[in-house]
Structures are given as structure tokens and as C-alpha cells.
View (cartoon, one colour):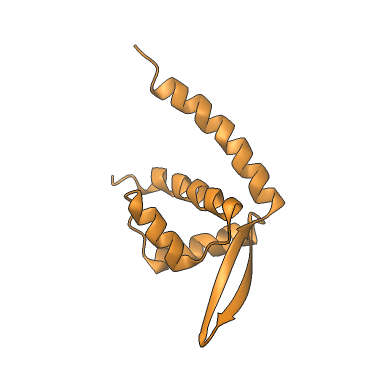
Length: 101
């Protein structure tokens, strides 16, 4: 077992965290996640972004910069609410995971 099923949810929370702060785009978030030790391919990330968008957590707009067309994602109000809820659950879980024995 390589932990992917556990990390998938952490990656989604990380994406939401950044999408609340500012618009994100695929390559930028791949690089950001890599700084934290997650190695994602575009083939893994983009379906995740599309799924989060279809569930209402992200919205996207396409913007052209010269010849390049880039899709930017932002957290929706539903995504912000989900992140806030998840933060409370993560805080509680981390308290249990790291409490002194």
C-alpha cells in the first residue's frame, strides 16, 4: 500500500486551501504540492479539479494571456464552507494523533 487513498483527501484540502486564498491553475498547484512532497501528474490532478468543480467546491474561468489559454479555479462558498468544516475535523484528529501517551 502506498498511501494514495489517504493522501488524496489531504491533496483536496490543500487545493481548497489555496483556491480560497487566490485563483489557482493546474501547473501552479502541481508545483505547490510538489513543495510539500506530493508528486502528481496532470493526469491525476485535472480529474481531481474537475471532480471538485462538478461537486460545487470550485468554479473555473478561462483566461487568455497572449497565445496561452489557462483555466483558473477558485473556491466557491460551498468549497470555503467545506474547508472550514474540514479544518475543525483535522484539528481534532491531529490532537488525537499527536497527544502524549
